[in-house]
Each structure stands twice: as C-alpha cells, then as structure tokens.
Image (cartoon, rainbow, N blue to C red; front, side, top):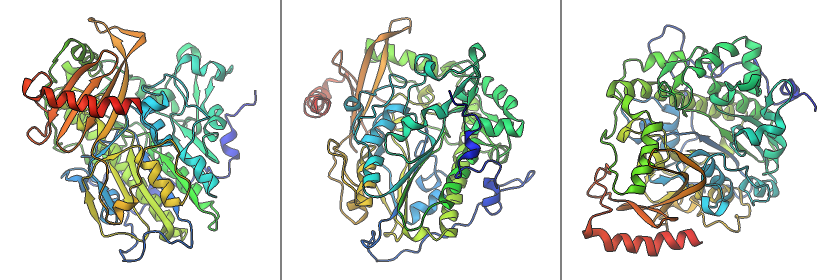
Length: 545
C-alpha cells in the first residue's frame, strides 16, 4: 500500500512550519508576559441591509469544538475566562443560550450535525459502535450540489476507534489516519485534513505508532516523544486522567494552533468566485486538560467559578447502576475543590486558545477580502461537567453536559441579540443549508435558525438528547452486547430522562423552581401524572419518529 506518511507535504493547502498562530495574531503573548493580549478583529459593522445578499452565495465557516460548556465564555456571563473573539461574534450576531446537543457524547452528536437526524435515527447512539454510513443524506453533500467547495479540517469522528475498525489500516510502520480521508470525503467534503485527540496520537500498543498530519509535524519538530510521554501520564480513566497540566509544547506547536493554521492556509487558497463551506473541527477543550504555557500562566491563579458539588441521587436501581459507572470513570473520590479548580484552569486555557484561533480565521477572511460575504457559526458537540455533581466530561443530561454554545454571526449582521428559545443540534445543518440556498435534508426535522435571526420566534417547545450506553451490572462491569437507551426531553420549565429498553423513568427536574437541578423528583407522587404525560406525549412519539 502507498506510504502516506509524507503525503501531507504534497498537499498545496497544508504548509507545515508556516507562520504560527502567534505570527498571524497581533500580540498573542511573549514568554514571561503575565497576560496574553488578543488580536484586534474588526467585525463587519451592523446595518439594516438584508442578512443574505441574493445576488451572491455566501461563504460559510462552521467552527465546531469538542466538549465546550456554554458558561465557559465571557459573553455568557463568565467573569474570568478570556474569549474576546467569541464575544465579538455574539456582539455582531445572535447568541443562542438554550442550545442542546443531540447527544452528550462525541460521535452521536456529530452524526446528528452531519445528517440532521437524531441518534436513534442514525443508529449511532454511543462512541465507537460503528462507522458512519456513506449512504446517509448529508449537509455537506447538499452544499456540493449547490455549487460549494467544501472542506473539513480537524476532528471528524466519522469512523469508530477500536482495534477492529483500525485492523485494515495497520501497516508495518503503524496506523495512518489519512487512510480514512477518502471515506470522509464520501460524505460531501472536497478537502480533508483529519485530526484526532491526543489519546489516539499517543497510542503505541504492540509497537504500533499513529501517524497523522499533526504527529508528522511534531516529529519534524523533534517534539513528538515528549508530547507522547505527557499524554500517557494522564491516560484515559486512570487516577491521573483529570489532572490539569501545562503543555510541554509551545503555543505554536499546540494542536489547536496547528488546526487553526491549516484552516487559514486553506482559506488563502480559495477562488473568490466560488462559494465555500469550511468546517473547522477543534479537538479542544476535550480532556486531557493540558493548555499551552502562555494561557496556563495566565490562568494559574484564577478563581474559577464552579457549580453544585452534590452527587446525583440514585433514585432507582437502573439509574444508580448507571451513575456508578460515571462516578467510577470520573474518579469522583479525587474531585476536591482544589483539584477541580486546577483542571478547570487548564480547560479555560484550551478555550482561550480556540478563541485566539477564531480571531486568526476572521483576520484571514478580512485580509483575503472574504469577510463581507462570510457567515461564521460556532458550536460544540457537547458540554463538560468539570467536577459539577462530582462528575467529569459528559454522558449525563445536566445542562453543563447537554447544552452547547451556539453563536451565529452573519456577514452584514442583525442587531445583536441573545435568544433563549429552544435550539437543537439538528437545527445547525438546516440553518447552514438555508443560508446557502441549498436543498434541505429530506428526512430531517431540524429547523433553520435564520428566521430567528430575522426576528421570528422558535417553533420548538422541547429539545431532545439521546444516549446509548452499555448495561452495567451491580459491580459496574459493562455488557458488550446489551445497551441502555436514554432520552431526555427539556424545555425552559422541565427536564425528564427516560430509559426506553426497560421503560424506566430516571430524572425529573422543575427548572423554574430548581435551576441547578439539585432535586430529582422522579419519585414524587405530585409530578407522577406530568411525568407520564411527558413520556407518552413527547418521548415515545419522538423515539418512534
């Protein structure tokens, strides 16, 4: 088979070793500085002109991060975190504060964003069940049909990550993620630069090494070995998994900076006479919580706000067994206030570097004369618990895990607004296709958010989120064949979680009386009828759709 380890040097839109993020942004910080400064980004001034210029198809940039909780942004009320470019996006567009992911775990949520379908419709309800289906109708494929040049740079997670899935990729020298490029292209992307998280990069079992554009870059810089050593020190679900650390790499060498650099290089190559859709998939701020030295120094003494520390109640046997798996993986016994604060500081650093990269992308648009015809959308696949309720990461339905940031900034703007209407992950592809004037996805129930930008209200009363997890016995051992299938329905007043296989109701919260979701009332006789009505009138029809 053709050796693709050096293929990256032959792709004209990748320039390894080019000017780093710090070189593109004005004053991103020098070693020893107490506080990084931020690039000044001149957003398009507000006007009363129509949002979409009908005479010219707009460009669209879709920025999707991994595991970003919505309160980790200054524009959402966080007094500590530095996110000036996301804040400017919100000030020149619409900030949706009740945006729910289709699933609080990576792969199902991404499948829903790609197709506009819920997890029970795609069949992807958990990570690493199977690869995505190339026969799906997808948002980027419809964009191609509408004349768009399409690209995805960064994390895709379109394929499962297990030994069986990778078996056909193993060469005598290791595994190359670029062997999946043609598979990813089949979903509607002309250009692909696939990257994944640090755990995959550091994988070396049985003498098998991982190769990707980013690991090639680090090897060329002579820094891969120390990077791999650091990632192994915080390996998944070990006692040190959630430790916050400062990266052994420079800010320029960070994976977020690398992805930003590839995105700006791609933008510089585009034909101004052809509309483009660029999907930038940031791997951060997913664990491990390792931030670059500049941002780590900035947040080293920061007082990080945190949420409730009371563990969830085991209201019935099934929910108790599931929570035990989450407590075990979260290493809950280690989650002291100081420990969480240290990890959160590094998490904030990861978010701020993404924000810095967004500033670089906007600046590149301006330098290339593309800003006045480019929409920018920012969101995430799911949130992050970060120690709240003694839980880490995601895979629960608390707002920290299931809500995501969603900001839409049109090129010619609407009056800035914050919208608390219910929004779902499946609405993002509908919105992007609407902006492009492309055909909607025929089987999707997602709704375009463009009318809301024009002043209309949302027609959506509830948002749904789903999660499939392997059944655990009383000792927490999980069955590889059997799965629980959870679905949660939420509006601005109530949230209910139901397991469809055993027909077990697991959670009910009155968000008006209990906004922090501290009292699970699923066994309260006073709300039994309401719970049954929500199950019969909302959840069961939803799952049968």
